[in-house]
Length: 66
Image (cartoon, rainbow, N blue to C red; front, side, top):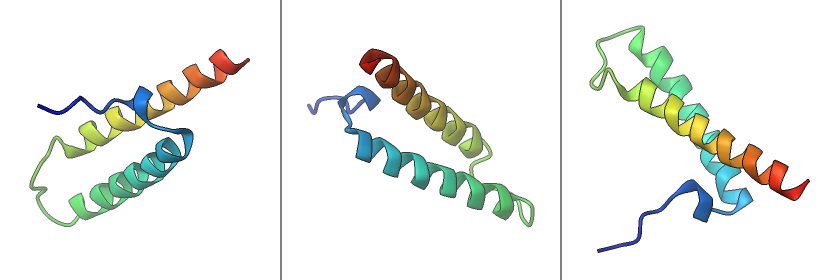
């Protein structure tokens, strides 16, 4: 059994890379859904939740440092 990988265990650079990748994926998902029926209609919601978790962890680290 592996340890659960959370946002708190990632470094700042890993969070920024994950944020950029997730936003790009959401953007492509949003525009590809306009042309055809999406395979996973819940995927954009999952991506937005992931983005929110990343931004929350980033903000918590900023407040902790200050």
